[in-house]
Image (cartoon, rainbow, N blue to C red; front, side, top):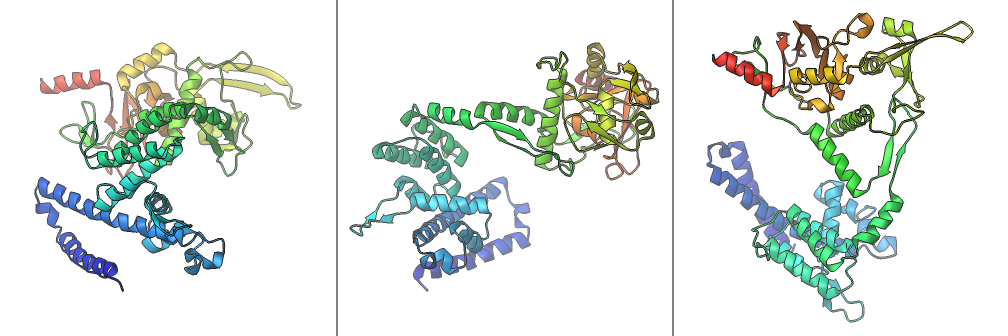
Length: 472
């Protein structure tokens, strides 16, 4: 065993003692803020230096696995399909992290000349030195390498200059004197260099992206419609901003209006959101589509605004049984979807004779008008479910008492709910009632075992009024 492996073994043993002693005793609880920050900084420095060795080893594995003869490859000898799998098996990291090690290893590895056998410098020698010094980690190297490689930089001198400047910036010696940058900040600096060295690069990339852009909706299977495609950066950025605005979490406590029985201060912990990040993105996209459809600014179809058409038998709707059918989707949908669509839209009741002839068409307008929405917004302020931060403009208006059961389309029977809570109201454990024209909610048992009805609002004006009342 060589000296490097022996030294790493000794270092690993000593580090194990430090980590075990610190974690088993929960020692950090008694440390000062400066001490906690210092141990994080020291551990990160060790981690970056360890990553330098892993990247170097990965580059060597890549060099020994480039043979066109599979049996001669190092990866084959260890039973792996490629370098990425080899790194995953040895280091036990994710496939994405293994890919980063491979990219960093190739970019910072020195190579041998095929003709002379001399050692040639790495493609990014300055970043290699910064990695060896612990000034950057693999994620920072990948951020720089991917950005510069994507630009059409033909000059070796220009690439070397960018490499040297970015490595200097990683050590805190950049031209702007901005201190020690994170990997994301280095990526931004690399993008500036790429734009400077390849001023025309963005235009041909955009032309190629324009040709490849696309969005496809697949056939509905098992209740899901696959969505595939590639978005242009500006469209993706706008979509991301809108999704972020809807899904942005608000931690802390939720305030209830005067008369709450949940505590002296009228507050309770916000209930946790059980949805995964992709599920939140889906619900945000559904909200965006719904808001756009009701905006009145989309092109018309057949003289009317784009309208979601859900058909169902009147007897099934009244009984709450059976299924509905959405125009354009082959698979039937459960009654909860039908009720959700009916709650926010109008109803066209069509009576058919036994032979299928249309005998009568009734139009039941149950859509809250703009004046009612403004009034309900003033009262509720946003989705009334505690802990939900979706603003009023993104919300739908829910008939607390179903229109089919005699519930009027009035401000005393309408409350603001986001798409997610409205869509899942039958199953999410939340209950809503109106008392004296004020909405009240009762949470699921896991959140409120007592099942307390709580008057709610997110209107800052009403919250301030109630605060002043309590103070007086």
